[in-house]
Image (cartoon, rainbow, N blue to C red; front, side, top):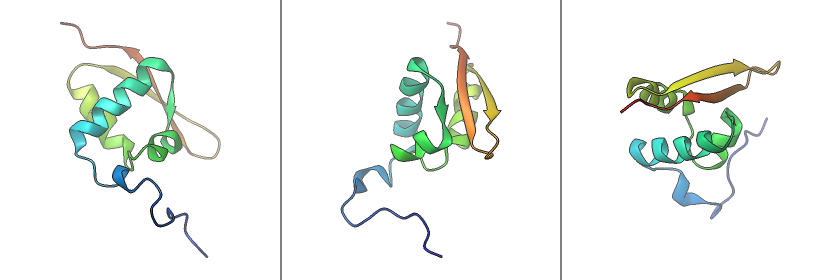
Length: 82
């Protein structure tokens, strides 16, 4: 079985981004629409659950739903209050 790995040269800059960069990218995406785990991974957020946890820690209300295929979908309900 061949795992789904990126081909050589395909968006390599996404693979080792600091958590802060990933959080900012994820928040921007969530402000536009719900984001699935697969969509997050496509832009270099390989483990979105910890980034969502960190966003929740700073006061954002994000709910998670699961699709039948067990893929998580994150929904921004409310941003942090000042």
